[in-house]
Length: 192
Image 1 (cartoon, rainbow, N blue to C red):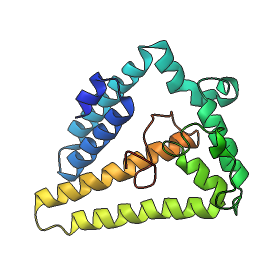
Image 2 (spheres, rainbow, N blue to C red):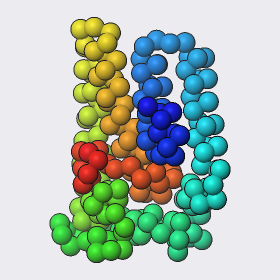
Image 3 (cartoon, rainbow, N blue to C red):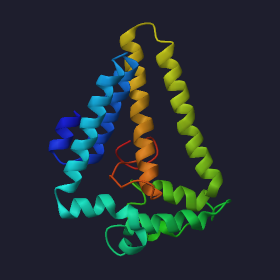
Image 4 (cartoon, one colour):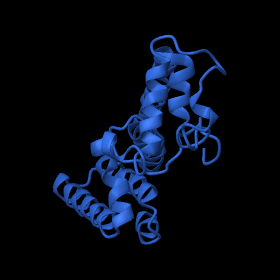
């Protein structure tokens, strides 16, 4: 699935599937050297794809210098960070945020985390992050306590999927990693 997403130039989904595959390989007990080789090859392929096209390269590297790219390639992330900072500790109040009025593109799907942070503040961010940490904890507990090896790998793979996609989305929205266009699982409109 990762390779099919990769050849369709959907780098975000390819990264998620590769991360799930690597996580399940580790859970299955495959030798660390083999897992590291797959991870290295997947990473190199992802970077190679991102660097083959000027537009894709600029989008992929825009987060490194938000100030210089805020007018074009990093516009979404820059506006997202402004919305997050407007939320402060307590937030502007439910429905009172201004980011969703067109300042933050895709505020209802890819960038919903910025709107939550603006309207609910640090408290809302802690609830969201805590929810994903609880999902990870209970998901991996289900994998550990599974009756057979297949069920353990299935539970672990599903947990990896939610957690990796959430990390990629929140990291992109907050400007820590490149934006991939992935939704925030269980929260974003569409794709959840």
